[in-house]
Image 1 (spheres, rainbow, N blue to C red):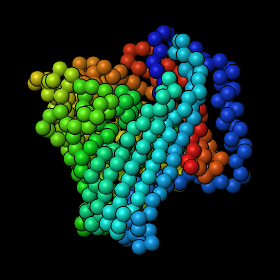
Image 2: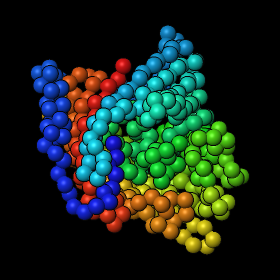
Image 3: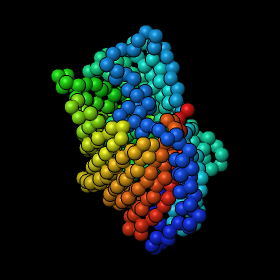
Image 4: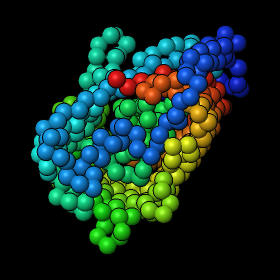
Length: 385
């Protein structure tokens, strides 16, 4: 849930009634939870397990062949901001259908289909991911189709099912394209990944070749947008290190390059460098990530950057969290210059009253561009079925 920037001056606290709604919604589910509940497990959440079906140490057993697994993720939101003329409101989040199927001991399929309700009650359907994967061994896994680009960490660790995210909403630098994001979050192409030989299973590689993002029209609104408007292909390479002796620790970096065409048909050289370090266990979560975006057109280069630091700690089924979220964009940058710079502090609490139900309540104080700070409250109910 993103909080828009205020067009007027200083903070006007949310009315007491709005604050009470957020507090009572959180306490109601928390008190209804059983006395003994395990904390949300961040080491291997179910969705990520499904994403990594092809990464198991052994091939699937014959009984598992041709199996079809379907999961659905939903959410309900409530938000309040001190931006003028914006009342507090309830809304539905994405309805995310995540499907995997094992076709043989080497081939598998993954797909993710998202349904979203518009203000005129129409349902918008998005095919977010569709991949056919061939697993030769732990060192060579090849996928073809539509995927989440392996830029940095967050984009491939957390997909469209918001159940697995601790705070409400993604870091702004990783916002989806249809939400004004600055990254090519989705791609159509081929990925190759696996373990680096002789690295004792600690070092992983990733290579991606895709069409790149189309910037001259609303991404994905036209089926033709799935085709590359120029002969250049995007490439992304990444390395990640997961030492066996420090379970939960991961560090990595990636480099993405493409030549894109803007609305004026000008070619823009696009480069993205990302680096991150994370530590995730069943009780502790610490994420830190920074990205540098370069755009060059007509001999003029522009450098922009963004990132976040996020931490949370679980006590039973309670998990308080904090995120600092920053995005700096030069207004003169081709294709993304209209995106406002921002800096935000997010503080919240997540409660898991059931294994597949979570409730988040958070406060955010954000500055967009040169405007004054905006304050807001949000509550999100997330569930899996």
